[in-house]
Image (cartoon, rainbow, N blue to C red; front, side, top):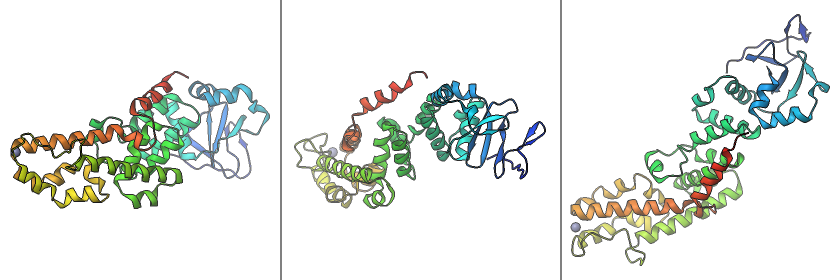
Length: 319
Ligand SMILES: [Zn+2]
């Protein structure tokens, strides 16, 4: 963070250049001489403009509308507002407000998370929408996007962030990714008790749904249906005896239906199938994964995808 220290122990003013109070540091690039409000986040102070804050944030607009900050503490001839946010987060938030296109350049997860937290807290719709759009590339709603993207390393952080900022559209994919990392991961990493419960229950529902589709005796139709009734029956039976298939059937190794699932199954057993049966099985597995994906929000006690999308779109109204 581009902050430089400049402290004074004895004065609030030193001529026209104003020195912040003791133990507090001026932001190097977000301290404007013609600013008319000072925000203090931890030990950093930012001298900015009320109009800019109010134009971007309904929370600041309302704050300036009802309160008379002139009556409170002053710094550098301006009202001083203690914002209770982390200084790094506030720097990023203000930097984005003052620099057109800056928010678009933020891609690092901790920074996107900071931006989303502050955008949610201060109701800056543009930053919030943009941050959510970035997170939707790793917590997608569409199966095709999910298929293209590698899993994130800490889905529990995404889950926590989505809860904190009230963004339900990110929850199914974040929870699903926690599920793919296993029961112990959920218990060890997901902080909220209610979410641990939802993840564990959802995980079991996913396993049950998957198992039903793998089960060759299932009336719903197994993924082991093949293209021609007389073809490859023996090979298909052999395939069903593969340990990986039993892992799906009997155990909780649901990672097997992640994007690499086909590769794991196909390695040796698929070599024995004819081209038609192999491609038919491939299609069936892909179809089964899609069925699971479409039902995903419901497994975690959430409304269907369409409703979650509508909920997000309805936020799009201007400030
Ligand atoms: Zn065949």
